[in-house]
Length: 179
Length: 149
Image (cartoon, rainbow over the protein chains, first blue to last red):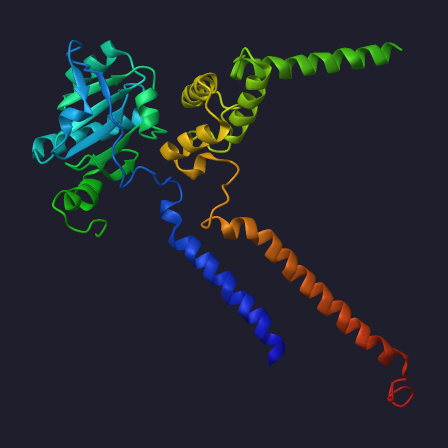
């Protein structure tokens, strides 16, 4: 009896480790952002559609906003654009864009052609602002609270599903992530 | 003699290819050789977040270049290596550090090799101990010997 106890124990331990691994596998490709629960990085960047003005984080205090990182060079951003337009049409929360390492003329042409879901778009030619947000691949979307705290981050194209499951509940203060 | 020469030539050609590649990814040269050494060390221990199994130093993607520029500027501004590591992980998380930090959360990571070694040693000790107690028994003639095939 005793001689089976050790192998059995080891087997149970291994099964436990693997079970945790399998359960967590959907989030494996996603790197958790250290920004969640912290203040959004302050920024003051040129406005894409109105270069005389700036898009500033200070002006956004006091209301919810989605911060969407995109670029015309990014294929997935084109896929996501339809969802952004829908979110814009719903009128629940404004979308602030960050045009990441992009050409201004092309970006303006993109918005004219596909429609503009953004309240305003900030340009980040050097990529410095994106680094502050811990962006590692467009598209990425952050939800920022009226207190200026990053509440949620989505990596990859935003889908209607993410919108209704993850973002809408957080806007109304309900627990999110349930189907 | 001829063969030797050809070999040397081939070797030189191969090495020059490698050199060109290294130059192309990161041509940064800091004025102070000590800063340069720290720059090289840091860019090798920070992860490129886009192509996650490469370091900043080895990655040709845009984001890696941006982060290398950041390391360079901060070194020139007199920041310490730890400052730069902390700055990076505040934005990208500990995942950006190829060398995990010593923290309570990472304790199992650093402790695991020692624990595994201990388990190995215990198993070894048990096997050897059991063999030792078996040995004297081997010398005693078996009772069944010669009785049944």
